Length: 93
Image (tube, rainbow, N blue to C red; front, side):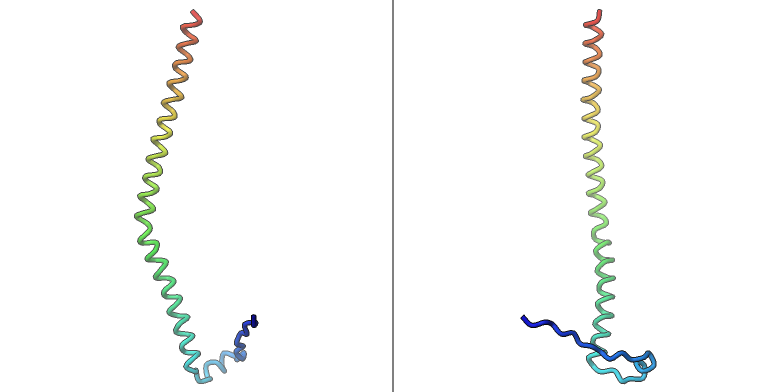
């Protein structure tokens, strides 16, 4: 397996960079990098836009189910507590 060699670009000052003629490869790389940044932003925005309603529905459903479960559990606890208290009261007479 051969090691990957990275291209080393000469380090130029900003003045040299502005004055140097741009090769087609450099222009293509700049454009591709710019397009990639734009695509990333658009993709993230669209993803959030599309997922927001679905996530809100899921959260609402989860909250509703949890409330129902808690209400059922609370009813069971209260019913048991009342039954125990009635048994104590009746048995204590």
